[in-house]
Image (cartoon, rainbow, N blue to C red; front, side, top):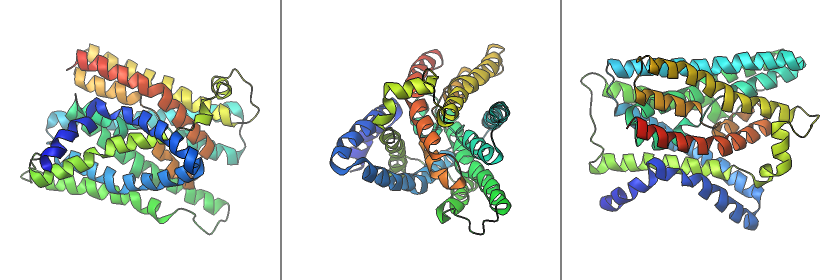
Length: 349
């Protein structure tokens, strides 16, 4: 049995994970013809919760318990932490600029701001397996730290803003489901456990042995399953020519919706990759950071908005804009990411 799983593992790892986006998209269309799209979406929401609770925490645990933190690893971790902070600072500044420019009323400002900030979160865990095929340690660290930001820090900040809004509007009931309140602490507990177990003089695990390998295989399933989830979340109705015109501003739309999607698209696809690319490309040319670091940093800067942001809707972010920005950044960014992985894997093997 173990030998069979070992033979399967290469085909659910690395670049072999990427086609699962297309598989998820096509299969969902076919199944929806029988069951209806609404039923599929409800099922996928439950699958998303299963991924969040039973796969992603274990994946982060495996990454951290397998990582020996020397001075270079700590240095890269600090750089990644700075990049994540920079990304959210860019989102904050850009959102504030657009709010001032578009003259939103106070209530709409809050919705816009939280939606913009949340949707700066990228799908690092979903593409991480492909990057780890070439730059395992760097991609693993980036994936783990982005996961903590996405699933722990940002929900905590959104929760704080949500409670503040509830007090201002005299809402006595907090509509947040219990699993969102619990999840940040649940996720961090796996990371802390891994760090403590792997600390100086701590345990080491050979993931080629039988039981550890099963854990490795189990966590490897996370990536294709998550990419399938991303593909399943793309609605064919969003791919019409009229929607494309609205996205790029060729078709006037009086509603705020497409303005918001366009703002987030510009932030995700243009501003963030450009700022990070210029900054860290310059550092690489000056010899301050190695090629592997640059590759992982640039690829992560171009990743699409993570579809797991849909689980943060109870915190008061805009549902329709979030759904559209996830779809369009996935369609645009994933092909770019595949090309970048191929280029960087050649330049920095």
